[in-house]
Structure formats: C-alpha cells, structure tokens
Length: 277
Length: 272
Image 1 (tube, rainbow over the protein chains, first blue to last red):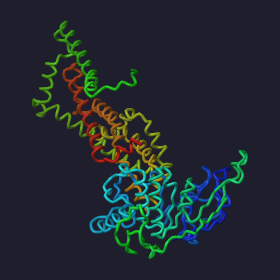
Image 2: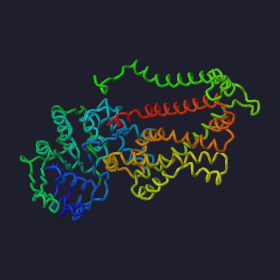
Image 3: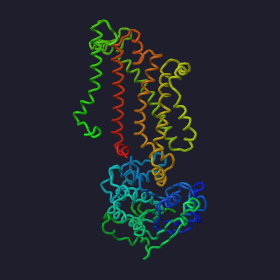
Image 4: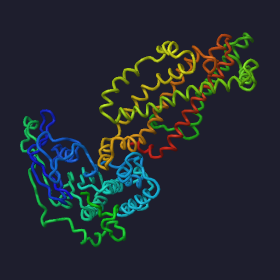
C-alpha cells in the first residue's frame, strides 16, 4: 500500500526524448493500467518505477520519499517472460524470496525455518491454483501457470507495489480470463498498489481502477525525436472500483482456484501479508 | 524425394555411424597387409597381432625396469595432470566468469585483459614455464591451465551475461543482494553451461598435455608415444593413440551424462 507521485518526470536517451512532463498522483491501493501505442514509453515508465532506469529530470516519490535508484523488495514485478527462475522448481521459486530475506549469507533455509516457509509457500501456491505442481520445473508449466507462479513468487516477498509488464499478453484468451480473476483477487486481498503495462484495452478497463494513456502529442517524423510521450488521458473507471477491505473478503468469484481454507490475516505467507512499516 | 527430407531410421543410423570407422579400419589393414607382404619387417603399418602383442606387453606385463604396468602408470600420470589442471581451470573460470559476467565494473576491469590473454599462444609460453617452474608437474599443469582458462572465463562470462536481464531484476525485487544473486541465480544456471565450456576445452587440454609431456617428462601417455617414436614402434604408438582417443571420448560422454542428470531443467532452457 503505497502512494506514488510523479513530479514532472522526463526521460531522455541522448537527444531522444521518450517521456516528458509526466506528473501524476497514484493513490494507495490503486490499480493503474498504462496503455498506449507501442514505443510510447509505457515500459520505460515502468522501468523507472522499478528503479532499473532513472528519470532524466523530475522525481518519482513513493510515500513521499524519493525512489531508491535500484530495484528492491518494496516493488515486486512480473514480466511477460523470464519472470521465474528456470533452474528452480515451482516450490523453490516461491520460497526464494523468503530465503533471500532470512538467510543473508547462504540464501537457503534449512530445517524448521524451511518447513515453515514451505508451508506458507504451499498455501500461496494453492491460492494461485498451482497445488500439486510444486516439484515441477517452470518449463513443464503452461504459460498461464508460469505467470501464476510469477505472481505467487512476487507476492510471497510482500511488496508494497506490484509492477506488471504486459504479464498476460502472451496468454490465450480463456487462460487470460482466469488469470484476470486471480489478479483481481490478489489485488483485493493484499495491500498492493498495482501498476500494469498492457496493450489490451479490455484488460485495462476490466482490471484497473484508473487507465492512463501515454501518447505523443506530436508525431510528425521530424518531431518524433524531440517530443516525447506524455499522459494524454487519465480515466477513472466508472462505476468507481476500489480494493475491497480485507474483512469484507468472503468468497472468491466463480471460476478461480481458491482453496477452501480460512483466511488468517497477518499470518505470513497467507495472501494477507504483513505490512512493512 | 529431396535429400534434405530423407531421415535415416534407427537401424540405418547405426550402420551409417559405423561406416566411417569401418572404412578407416579396412583401409589401414589393407595397407598394412600390402606393405607386410612386400617386407615382413616393415614397422610403419604393423598388423593386428603385433599391436596386440605390444599392448599385452605395455598393459598387462610388469615392466622389469620400473616394476610397474607401463600403460596404467602412464594413464594415471597423464590423467592426474589433466584432471588437476582442468579442476583448477574449472573452479577459477566459474568464479571469474560469474564475477565478470555479473558485475559491470569487473567486466570493465578484467574483460579486455582476459580477451587479450586468450590470444596468447600457450605453447609459446612453455619455455617460460619450464624456466620459471622447472620441468616437474607444475609447469605441465600450468601450461594446460594457461591454455584453457582464458577461453573458459571468456565463454562463461558471456553465458552469464546472456542470462535474461529480467531474472537479475526479479531477484532484486525479491530482495537479493549481489552475493545472493551470484549464489542463487547466476551460479546454479552457470554450472550446466560450465560443463559445455569444459567439454569444448577438452581438446585443447589434451593437446597441451601431450605437448608438455613430449618435451620434458618421465611418464605419461604423451611421453611414451614420443619415447618409442625413436624406435619407430608404431605397434605401441597406434594403440596408445586409440587409448587416448577413447579416454577423451569417455570423459566427454561422462560430462554430457553429468549435465543431463544433475541439471534436468537445462535441456528445455537450451532448447528455447
């Protein structure tokens, strides 16, 4: 749960201006969909949020503090591809975040600590519909399952902001619908602020609380280099959509693969994650 | 049907595989018997019985002068040198390859240096090694290490850099430090590629081993070949060459099996 503020952000590569005059506020627990034609800088904006790239001008503030200059555990990410580690099994992929957090030197957990973490991971895997797959390698999973795994892996670490870079773009329509339901549920049940880049408008309007379109205002060939894209439309979804309160979460929408277990708020590994101060 | 579309079946494949080996063997023995018919004392292309006799003597009879089985002790000496050199190369390449591949600073510092050193012809360094380290085991092992290590580091660093950037970023979003990225993301994915790199360097490693043994040694497969060359003892040389080839082939097969068994996830990654 974090508020994000873009303060007159520009991004230039040499003479080439990609983004200009990006100023916006993202309220906590919002679900932002970034849309726009290809090459308009959606992904660049996401990479700046991630800390992989720095703005050339302006600032990005998260909860009032400037964004650290490199990726960290506050911001989870799911890419379209290569989001999960091919050399780790499903369970090891989900466990990894916990192991990295709790074992600074060996980055591995053993004994009781590992069992506890594995229990949490198994619960989370059941929540995202991957029960029974835990000892498979990602290459043995379908594209949709890999993305479910990527979501579970990101959420296990308890980020405040979740960044999605066309995460469902490569999936079949049916599978995409399923994973949309899952994504909605995860957003409702966790404290995430979500920023998603997509080129699918129905996905954007179907999931987000707010759809932000990036576009170049000037598009003549001789202007392309010197004018970047900026926010051209900022649409609040109507009727207004907002994340449900935790306590009001009762049942999952039909068709999702929610396990029947009780929710235990505050229990690490359950979908309700502890908030980090 | 076009040739590009003709795929041999299982059985045909086996015959095709055997054919070149068979042809070479036939050609050898045809030449051998032709020469021996003219001159029974010909030493250049010995017949099978004389090679069997030589192998029996080298491999299964105690050498009266040294009190050991020569072929076995030669093999142990050579494999010991090869093994220790490749162990050094492999471990060093793994560490340096990951460091150079993962850290842009280390790449800037060492990348060009490694590229340049990989161009130094190792055999030209052999006299230097003999002068500096003497004629013992160390100079031979050092030659193999120098001959294989720079290429291995360069290849491995490249493999590490080929890991998708997304994975490195993802690991950071899971809170990984540089050390943890190296330990849990880069190294496990580098190990199966290290086996590929090692397999590629096996050929050069044998080359440097035989060369070093030929020039200054008192044991080893290369030493023996070059020793008996003085007596034109082709009946020893040819079985030794076949034995070296077999050893190299078995090491290669072993590494391939190790890669498949130890890294079951790697085949599908490579197929991508």
